Length: 209
Image (spheres, rainbow, N blue to C red):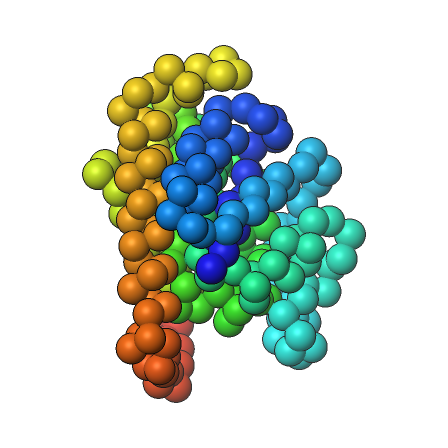
């Protein structure tokens, strides 16, 4: 079993990385393989709702000039997901949000029914709003949410400060244990023979008719 952790901070080894690393170490102690991927510093396009990904049916966004397709290609081999972000004005990093919106719209089927969690890091406030924004993508993608002893948030402004957040790091470790527990439940012999739920045909109502 493997969990993909996406570092949505522009700082490759900043506070978001510290929080994700704490989760990863806990998962590894439970026998779960992990991979932390950094979104990098290059621009990431926003979705333009062109629907070309739906025409191609290959899980790839039509724009291939950023890291989006590289990361979404990892969705099929992952059994669980954790996306981490710093908080900017009560929201996730815009680059990460663009990545999530495009990758789940184009290749969300590869992540469906796999456990997911959001992690947010803030100086003082806004973490819960950013946390909820990220979770809404999982909730629309048929992905079970993994919880912890508290909301999956930690504190820190200057690089490395999150390592001083004792409760925040404990929350990350609890998240890791809960993710491992859920993955093992899903992958035991009995659950392994259980098919995913039948999907009902989508009835779209746009409130204009």
